[in-house]
Structure formats: C-alpha cells, structure tokens
Amino acid sequence: MMQRPCQTLFPSMGGFRQVLAEHGWGIEGLISGDYSYDIRGHNRHPRTYNGQSPTYKPRTAWNLTYDLTRLGWGGDAQFIVGGVWQGGQYKEVRPNYAAMSTFAVNQRFFDGQLSLQYGYYTLLNEYYGSVLGGNSATAAQGPSATLPTQVGLTQFEAVPAVTITGRDPSKHWYNEFTVARSGSPKGYIQGLDDNPTGFKLKVSGARAMFVDEAGFKRPSAPHQRGLWARVGGIYNTSHYRKWKGGESSNNYGIYAGYTAQLTQPDHISRRGWYVDAKSTYIPQDRNIYGGDIQLTTFYIGPFASRPYDMASLGASRSFFNKDGRHLLEDNDIAAEHSSTGITASYAANVFRGFYLNNALTYQTQPAFTPKQADALIYQLVAILSF
Image (cartoon, rainbow, N blue to C red):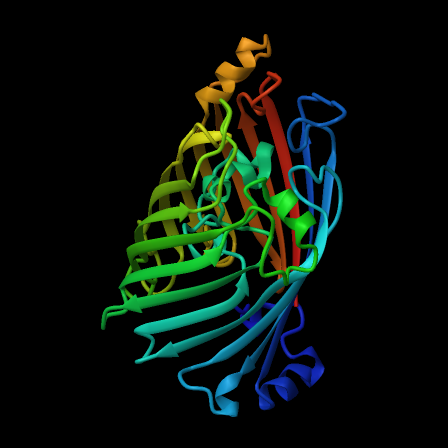
C-alpha cells in the first residue's frame, strides 16, 4: 500500500510527484535504521539471539505504481514494482540482501467487491496482520518467531502468487485466497540465497502453497470504531525435514486474530485504545515452534496534539517444539520449552515523514538452544519516508 504523500518527508518532491501523477505514476520510499542490544550485557559471539551483542540494521525500500487503466486494462488496475536493500549485522536472523520486493498487478472490480492480485510479492503482509501487536519474541528471534513464516509465508522473498479476494456489498465481510510458490522449506535465509534477485519462478524444494483467510474488517470512521476479526489456514505441499528423521509430505498452520478499537475520543478518527489478540498452531515435528499466543494493547494518538504517535504494551508466549527438545536432550544438549516476552514501546512521529520507535522487551528463554539467561532487549528504529 502506498504511503499518503502528505505524510512523507517531501510531499510534492518539488513538483515531481505531480508530474508523475499526471502520467499515471506514483512513488514512495523509505530509509530506516534499527539498533538492538540486550542491556543486561549478555554479550556473546556468535550471537544466539538478536541484540545479544550490539546489532545494527540499515534498510532502504521503494515502490512505484502505474495506472494500467490508461492502457485499457479493466477494473481499477495498478502495476506495482518495488525493491529493497538491507544490510548490517546478525544476518542469521535479519538477512542482508538486495532484491525485487514486488512486481505485480492489482485489479479491483464491482466497486471493490472482487480483487485480483498476481505477480511476485511477499505473502506475510497479505495475511495475519503481523504489524498489529506482533509477537514480542521477534525482538530476540526475528522473523522466525512469526509462526506463519515457519510454514512458508514469506516476509523478505517475493514469490510468484495469485490472490483472489471477495467481499460482500458492505465490504466488511471478506474471504482472501492465495495460490503461491512457497518460501524455501530450509528457511528464509536459504530462500534469499537461492533467489538473490527475487525473480525466480522455482526455488529448490519450494512447492505450491495455499492460503485462505476469512474475516470481518471495518475501518475507523466518524462515529465508527475499527474492528478486524479473522481466521486463516496455510497448507504447504513442500517437504520439510522432521526432527526425528525423515521428511514430511507437507507443512501447515492455522491462526486466529482479533483487533478492536475500544475507544474513539474524537468520534471521527482512528485515535484511541485498541486490543489485538492472536493465536497460531503449527505442527511441532517439523518446525522450531509448535504454537503461540499474543495479546497487545496499543493507543493510536495518545495525545490530541500527536495523532500519529502510538504507545503499546504487549505480551506473548511461544512454544518450542518438544520433538526437537527431546532430540537435543537425548544428546545431552539443554533446550528450552517456551519463551515469554513483554514489550513496551512508543513510536513518535517526530516530524512529517520521520518516525522514531523506542521499545523495551523482557524476554525469558531468548534462544531455543543453548539455554540463555533472560534478556532485556532495547530496540531503536528510525524511519524516514519520502
């Protein structure tokens, strides 16, 4: 989704955005920097979790859109192309890569009741709602703690996919279905190594995957509080190595999420208290985790003078798989049963187009193995959008 130009660092780009719009083009971009450190001082090399030693991660991303209706395409058709570069330390959790991130067409028909998207794009952002009250374990274990990525939904790697979304006349009830090539069953790091440009149709071991999500989504509006309830399922036909030996014939997962705006102090906007709850199950015999539960409360616009700030407090519990734990214990290697995290954060809109997010996470059992002391991870993320 394109950022609103009025909220970026350079809304008009000296008139360049207007010239692009007159010819059907839109442009957006961001530059971000991420710093993480366990302030309890558990420095270790090599790291076993993010921030165990000071960790830096710069990133840039951009998107271009083009109005395909100018070429006679049906529906409200948009072509989207984007790229991303990410560098820094601890690539085992947050990879270093440069690749195409989106190369797709989005079309809407019947006043938005039917949507089609096809091409190359990442899948995690299409489903689940990970940016709303995410799993606090991601502070320590990064994307692998977001369980849908364990069963093939990609966060970094664009994959060939087709998505069909149907909505009722109110546009609140929906069903979204995707057929795609899975991410690599060997993990997202291997997937990026196998497909460095992002344009490959095939990646070794990655087979067809099917995702379906049904729910109710009502945006915040004057005298209307936002609400999003959804359930989803993922079925991946790729073969995954089992902890006890051999390979599975598939991988799968189910999840449920509920995000509700509890208050609307100005009665007109998305400002107010929210609650977000999620739970996910995946089979433990072929994944690092077997399930998780999450609960977060956050306030958008905690001060009337700062409508774009957000304060949040969340907790999550992730369950490591017992098959892997038993295998390690049989070899006299200690492993954890679960990991619990509590995160407090404040994202400040310092000025138009610049966000600064400070977060502090207390994480028990921050790594599956070897066992580690509890961590207190500080994260600072700076984002410039243009």
